[in-house]
Amino acid sequence: EAQVTQNPRYLITVTGKKLTVTCSQNMNHEYMSWYRQDPGLGLRQIYYSMNVEVTDKGDVPEGYKVSRKEKRNFPLILESPSPNQTSLYFCASSSRSTPNQPQHFGDGTRLSIL
Amino acid sequence: GENVEQHPSTLSVQEGDSAVIKCTYSDSASNYFPWYKQELGKGPQLIIDIRSNVGEKKDQRIAVTLNKTAKHFSLHITETQPEDSAVYFCAASTERFGAGTRLTVKP
Image (tube, rainbow over the protein chains, first blue to last red):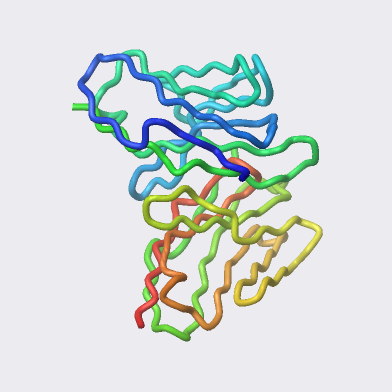
């Protein structure tokens, strides 16, 4: 089954404690991205990756890091989380072999930073 | 960069009625307009999309219209059912999303 898998689904942690949210896709997609979803603001892009070892900032990259060492994985790293990063996070992937393809989303990771 | 505005933010309809959600965008170069449905506890899922060489597309009870001159596009759901209740997002290009519309269909 084609899917994007995020882990963990829920996490409560404290300010300053480094955390990583993993994302994996099994569709051999070139493009992967991370979004955060906040009430009234919709989905805002944090970082994206066009392919292995190619990453770039989205609209709200401050406080986040990513890496793309393998095509299937795109982890999101919060090195020193702060309460304003409490949010619902989504990883997504899409094919870039043809233009204008929809994104496939994971089921989300709800992060609470105390 | 691209700016997408979506209205209304909430919409409540009776079962069987139609629902319309509207979006406007700013970048005239945008040429791909997907719509996603997000159910509780899930990620957004594509329900329909339209490309700029087409003015309208229909899939059963769902249709999307695009007016490139006015830079707006709309989602139309006819004969709504309770299972249509969800949050709907429009997007212009692959990555730029509207703020979402929470649709409630009352039985």
